[in-house]
Length: 403
Image (cartoon, rainbow, N blue to C red):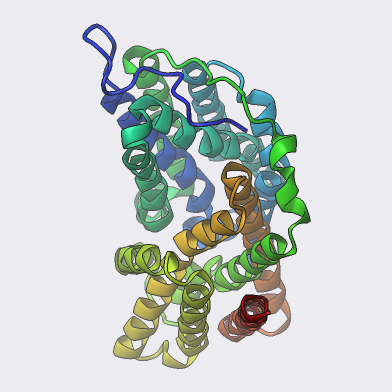
């Protein structure tokens, strides 16, 4: 892991040194494309399953494959590649996404498509783990927080809008066309970085991972990581199949599903703001509150799917809670890993992807054995377990505080 001492030109450098604003902007756009590539599959699952003649639950395992690959390979690959020149590293990662998206666009079957999804999954966490650090180095210590937030704005935009945009594009140009668009945009981004981004040498490594590994022996930290796994499992047991739920339970025409997902994402921005404000004051309390809202909203989806008003209300509550839990989990785990926040943040990304993969599995099993209408109830049950875990953690903290 690396410190935040500046290895790059900062915004206070003299004339002749490129200012960091353009490079940070390019990182934010690249982050949007890379994270969109991960999550876009959720919006195109129904079309993909129809075209490849596979079940929706089988198609959903592409989500599991990507998530588990990120979870397992992210930390070691990031550590192995973070010493490379950052500009060349980012361009190389984008070129990997160009090729993988092009292969996905022409995939004749699920196996080729799975290989095309596995490859970028190896490098997504490398980008995610180094881009925010690079942005902070570029801006200098005084402005590092703003710079990192700009990169994460690209990530948040992908999480919130990438899926519905992909769904809308799929209904216009097909899911294969959607992957072609991602390939072309990734290539354009790689060229833009090569031409316009300043040189970005890797920052010096001054804090080896072994110094930060003490958090792995901290029971409170591990409990927070476990809580993230439960929360993301609850979130993605249902969200993985939301496009299909809108089509088959709410009878939304496929061409309109993307717009409903866009609305889901738009209200989710409110959740992102609320979660970010609340987590600093009460990390566990915020986790329990939004987990409870999430559970109620997912449970209500199927019963209210036949009513436009009811469906809208359930999706608003669901969208707010779902999006709020992203920053809540990240900040909560990083607070618990004080003194090793870089490692803590990386571990939470792995935990989130573990939950994403497990959610896709549980949701697929639920569809196969209980039916699509039961996905919301199962997701709510997992959310209830997460609330109990958070409650037990809160009780333990109070006992330690009064001991």
